[in-house]
Image 1: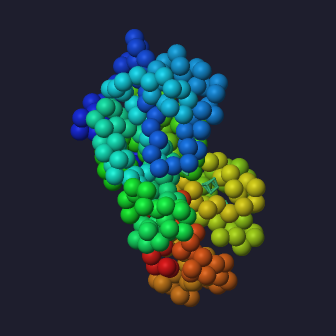
Image 2: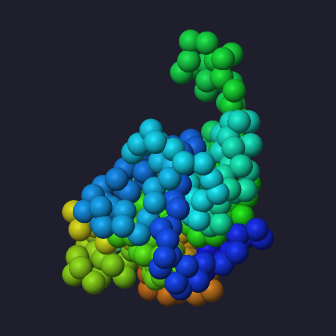
Length: 288
Ligand code: SF4
Ligand code: SF4
Ligand code: SF4
């Protein structure tokens, strides 16, 4: 989702909307680890500056003080995994002009979506002494599967600079300037040696959304795709490179034939944090 598109009931934000009043913000948690909310708390100095422009009306991770809706902007962390949360997200939408989802759980189901299509009761019986007390859906699904979402921020967790850019854009009534290119672009800008080329590591940087500043390759580790798919990603081409397979259109082309991973590992690489991102899921299905 590349534009800030107002939902059917949301009414667009305009420049000057918040010159004589504060933006009323709510932060909601669904099935998640709280890491994306911690990224917001981690803004510290910037949060203090923001409080002159933003009224943090609902943010249970930060304060027990709660103001009722409606809210100008709701930030939503986590995926939908219970009957109760399926209803709660509808209430969040009704109370919010804009809904922004935070992170891999909210935008692509999160690591908890690995249970989708598997035997949930069997999993639950392995973990809980009394699984009969659980009220859980068979699936973990992203927020956009349930309500209109105005903007999605990727990452596990989200990058605090991207988060601040979205909040600043909302305050100014403009579209957030979030780059949609791949981690490789950030990696090259940092002058890193490519771990895929130089060390044969299975790096997902070519198909992964920018935002982290190429964190893992900067420490000589391959990217494992926690920011989800980049715009116009070509997972099939990367799969061929990782599996050491020549492109089908020209089998004589001189590509390295050494396989860096086997198909089963490639499947696992593509099915971690962003399990339900279509670009990753569809490619993983070819190798599962
Ligand atoms: S996206 Fe990652 S950091 Fe954010 S809540 Fe989910 S698991 Fe935690
Ligand atoms: S190390 Fe990974 S992210 Fe960096 S250029 Fe190579 S493939 Fe791209
Ligand atoms: S390099 Fe890849 S796995 Fe590492 S933080 Fe960035 S997007 Fe996530």
